[in-house]
Image 1 (spheres, rainbow, N blue to C red):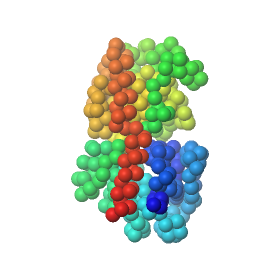
Image 2: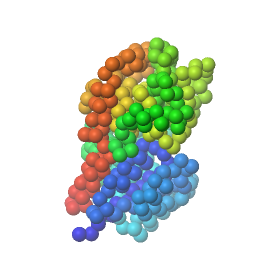
Image 3: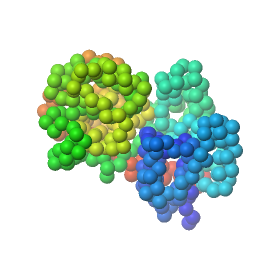
Image 4: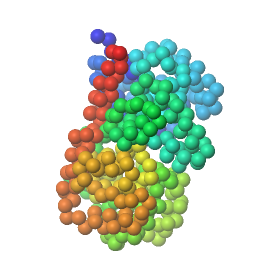
Length: 373
């Protein structure tokens, strides 16, 4: 039986949730049954994950088109590439790949992973006018692609309101990398990263932008009594960094690392994880924290509620944008005497439901089903 050739299309392999999803799918792909090919539309950025993909021995190609070139000749260049390589399955990730796949690759079996809630995400990122236009374009693309895949049940229900029937395959994280640290490992990591060894540490991971609402995290942390005995690290960079630093000026308990390429080290070295996001797809950072046995404190958006519903002992929820409620939750975490129970609950959630190997196997089963139809 010949292998099923799967072409994965992404704008780039820049550090992001979608890139991590592609990587985890292909890492655990059964090479006896599947032949993966990676194609990007644009040149790789500085934070490209390409070296990680190359370590897997994958066939990688890029059209190397700028945004303008992509607009002018992207579809024709993509059609030529696909005609040359003749994949059995095409799996697009992101708005440009989705639109190109929907509009010019109709003769192939096409998948897309729906990584976000377009009307929420794009309006927060690009403003109402451009954001709503981009969301509309992507929704139209989803309708034309054969196999849209939602990354959680709440997203599947949401996308169904646009008359799009989708499969559900949960995002997963690699528990061979993200797993609880021993006390000795945590101490060694803190020394390596220059983190205090004698204080409890909260971490908040992600791009510092409006959708992540880092301001609520800062205000909630400073309003809690725990800030006198702990510190919080913001892992990531973004347009709100200067604003966040101004809000926390003079507060030694709040620190910013900027963008790092070893997020897993910081998570495994921490004690607690916080996210105040206003909107998410199905966030890898939260799953990574849970896999590392880190109790989480999360805003009560639907994807977060869905994660915690698998075992409510794993973390706490607070109302979106409510810094006072967050402060209370931070204090409850800090004073909780059952942290080990929370840690075990978090790891068990990921191990059973949201691990990378299971995610990849689910995609493989769907590829085979599509290829046989």
